[in-house]
Image 1 (tube, rainbow, N blue to C red):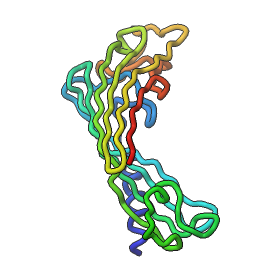
Image 2 (cartoon, rainbow, N blue to C red):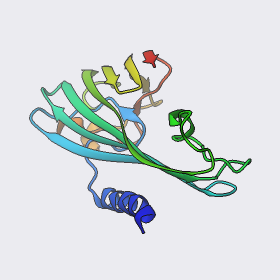
Image 3 (cartoon, one colour):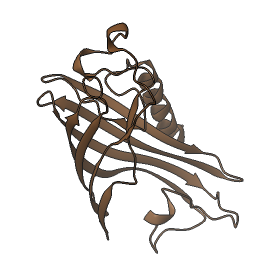
Length: 205
């Protein structure tokens, strides 16, 4: 029964997150040039789950708890708490225990034929996004961001900007309903932050 506590709790978190109402971010893994209006905030939970391998037992879930706050109408700050849960037992092709989220944390004292189960704190991070161009009031959306991250095993600093996806023709804003305050957008206009313009400085130990 004890072994089921982790997966049950993780499933409960996912179900709760599925029932939550969406805020400014219309996508789960793609960031946009939108920012929260001044004085507003939002809590987000994100989970990435891997379950099952060719043999044995394997379950790994990475979780991110985030609070976003609109410091001004152009500047948004966010704080992240990142944690994970892993439960594996003899899931390797040779009958040993391992896999993503497991192997990199094993030491010489671990019996490779025993069960690995652990809830782990990964890191905390801070993010600041400054909106240069509003995707509603300007022809394109553009934002700059910086995100330092620190944890027991690594430090990382990410900086970058949005890459605007400019449509062939913008719809008439007078005939379009905007989505929430100044953070809205026209349908079909997406201004995304991809990894290509991002500079990352990472240190691991």
